[in-house]
Image (cartoon, rainbow, N blue to C red; front, side, top):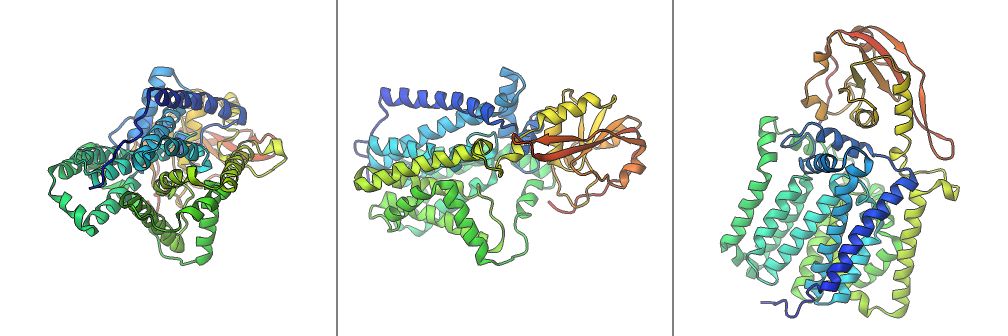
Amino acid sequence: METPGITPRSTHRDGLWLAALALGLVAAKAALTHAAGVELHYDEAQYWEWSQQLDWSYYSKGPLVAWLIALSEAVFGHGEWQVRLPAWLAHGALLAVVFHFAGDVWQSRAAAWWAVWLTLFTPLYFTLGLVMTTDIWLFLCWTWGLWASYRALIFERPRAWFEVGAAVGLGALTKLSIGLLPAAVGIAVLLHPRWRAQLKLPQLWGGLLLMLVIMSPLLAWNAAHDWVMFRHEGGHVGDADWSAARVLIFLLEQTIALSPLVVLIALGVLWRPPHQTGPRLLWGLSLAWIGFFIFKAFSDKVQVNWPAASYIGLLILFAGHIPALARWQRRALFGGFALAAALMFAAYFPYALGLHQDPFKDTKAWRAPVMALSAQTPPAQFILTPNYKLAAEIAFYWPENLPVYVAGNSARRYNQHDLWPSIAREAGRDGLWVSTSPEAPPELVRAFAQCTPLTSMPALAADGATLRTLYARHCREYRVIVWPRPGSY
């Protein structure tokens, strides 16, 4: 049995520094989003919509993010920073868990702090910790669950299985991809002769039971809603369209998102399997998860954030090697941090550098055109839009609390709006049709007695370019019709 030995228990000073770093991140992110003009991404706005109708789960994700948004706004009021505050705090918590995880693996405070800096200066983790989506909570639960699995298997601490169950259960209330963690750990247990003995431990099965108990709201809700979340996840598995070029693009995107120089140095250190059992476990699990996403990239598009949690184990391993790096490697690593900071600055402030490609354009210029549109709109009792993304942004930035519906687009996927009360309850009322296309669906003529176009509202970037245009029609006396149903999950 490997034992933790004299692990670098967080000293009082370390705890204070971690707390100060977490609070400093909150202030820095508030300032950054304000200076960069980063308004809500449609995913954030969608989760905010969910928070206005609290439930045990939702169409595509668990309820945790919506619950936390509702709590934050109940305490601090309505606004963008209030929506994001839980994510900013979760990023600080992630750094603390990474610190303790690396300390347990390497028995070194230096390695623990290097793990913190690696996490902090990785563009992918910083950016996904800036917005209130499911990703930052997945990272936090994943890291906690992986750390607990490490302690259960390497240090042979049976009670850590309860932590694994709690971490995976909470992660499932955020994002079902947390299931890759227990799946891979379970395979490792089955393949390793010594670890198979842990299958006899009541703590392991107790952790599994705890996971199911925590997940029970999600499971019960899905059972009552035709397992719609699982149908949605199955929708990500389409017909195979094999492409090696897509894999190369995937690897390039991942390298940029993780910081190119840091990736190159880490590859030079981690390309061989470690000799010790604990590091080899993290190495093998991480490569298995990354291999899964590479294989998936052969057949379908993999979004840049999907594999992000897979790298955390490698980050922990790399941190332990940094104190022994040669001087030129250390300098290159600091250069990688500087490059990461430069990439993030260019991404958040492209116009200040004369760039005209804005990676965060979907988060820019929503408030002004929506407010301008509301100022010229005659009285309306509800809003109708063709997709959930636009519906979410309109719902958040509209100055009145009006119900927003999604209809008029047969090519769309199902979304949470299809599970809420339908527009049929608005019969006889006046509404507003809002779209980013000047063309209205043919059903609009049958659905209302009369529709009058309003002045279109462009959303302008900092350099004056038009990011999108909002087209609206004020429509009188809604008549209940059968709208086209979405064709996929």
